[in-house]
Image 1 (cartoon, rainbow, N blue to C red):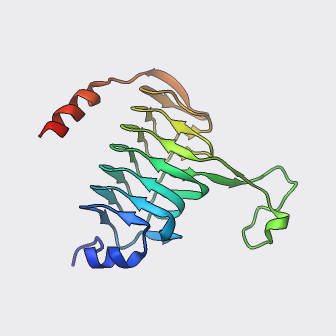
Image 2 (image 1 turned 180 degrees about the vertical axis):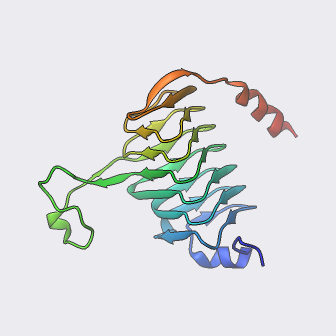
Length: 185
């Protein structure tokens, strides 16, 4: 037996949509699958959680133990992007000021969520153990180094690392040439 859902099993999850050659581990958990769209050639590995509004493009890999919390504002991953293991992406977060409770088991009147859609642009890669916070845009071709806290948007084609994440140098754009060759085949 394969460790990935079969086509029949995928159709029973209740996703908003999914494309061809989608490989999702049987150990992935979906919350509100009707708000999740998945493009073509996407692989999601073991022990991931996908919750809320999420739109995945094509040719995407989400490695083991990643957490994507789209909430109402949503997470978008564009084509050829990826997330390494044990990373988390948050489009919503509790307000930690002390003015509100931070527990989903309490009524909404006592809580305050801070949100903002997250976009991971084309050819961007998120290293292992990273946290991406609400409202962040990871620019096209941007590489986020392992264990980084991304609490502000990062410009295109940079290599960015740290807590908080900062750009340290430029990233090669050769990927754009490789994409053209790949598409022409």
